[in-house]
Image (cartoon, rainbow, N blue to C red; front, side):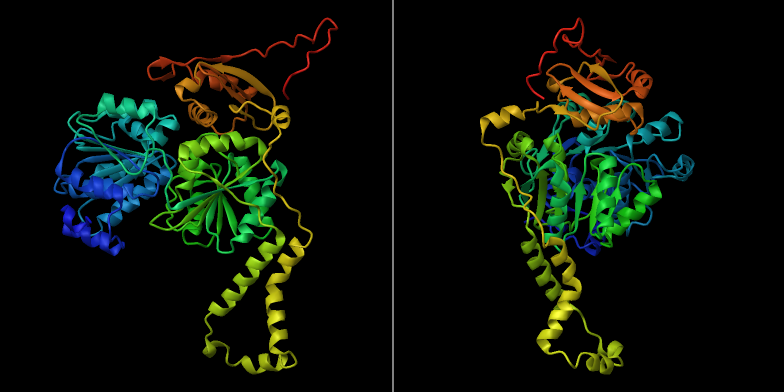
Length: 561
């Protein structure tokens, strides 16, 4: 088996990763580090989240840096500021014993003047988000003429978040004689386009099967009524007393509501979403990393850049529309050789999406029953007993209190004392679950029920409001899905405040509903917008007239509700 020493890494780097506890290279590191150290060709590396990609490109980049020169030699692009900060911190740890090397993160949400000052002092490696990098280039403060290495980290996420034009502009700016490294979890058409247009002598490295899930993750689903989703979440959390996980929600509003409910119900939880300031986000993320928080409720975008290796669970409060989003979510557990659990809470009308997810995963998602009260109480009782037994007793601290304690308990037998001790913590579970109901429901087997409750799988609805309906000339043949359309709308309009209603994806075009007050911003933001050199048209779509709404004629009954 290959080890780090046999890869030809500098002694100072080996010393740094030894301090970090690195022993055996991960599969992606085994396939890339030696190749990048000894060859100048471009590389596409496909591997899931949590497989050690940062070290896979970071260690070679550090070793190839000429610290005698005070110019930028490597540019690393990341989709979010959280990931940008995390990658920068990792690179600094890898180069801990190379004092001369300088690494700088550049991202939005931080003062650009500070970043400009640091650039003037001289930097070897810049880690940045596409938007801030373009801004610094346009201001003439970021000179990329001396770039030898360009790394696109989580390239598929950058494209799904709408950074295609920024990536094209940056790729055209950097020198043609460079090594380009593209790290991604999936290989959509736009990634292939970048490789064909901007990369040379490309070697493709794949760890595991493309778009497949980590084998160390067990996938579970719990089927309940939509109204029972929150109660099911609480029962799952209660059944695993030592749970340390992330609950993924679809929207910021839902994230806030679920986190607030959990906190009110006494759970050690908090929320991570786009409405937080940077200092608030840093505080929540740090509290979770050091395990002062047990449950983090987050949106997909907000959780990017959160690097935690020891998560026991990922809970999908909703099944995401895009199976690839689910793979990214679940990849946050089951890391570093540890076993993880990815749970999905679904209702009966989502079985079609579940089967689609299983095809993408290449494995079955196992159905589990939501625990009933008796099971939860039993699990919590034995967990409490184990905690009591494992508690360290420092007699020097409590010896002076023991005589009085013994005196107060002298009229209780050993058995009675144990009963009282356990009941102090355990009674609340008994009270809460004494009248519990079974939340589990069965999948529909009756074809007539399936037909009556049918809704097109590609329809996606959020709470209704005063919506205006729009047309866009992109559809499923362009790999458009509701999640990607939402990203595109939010990114182009530079806001997350617009409420999006019903989305219908057809083969070559789609319709969506948007809060009417954002119509002008929507139209201006999509002016001259292109996807794969194709002009994208967004225009207002008139709702079809109801043939029964005039002339006193009877309205036609809809076949499906």
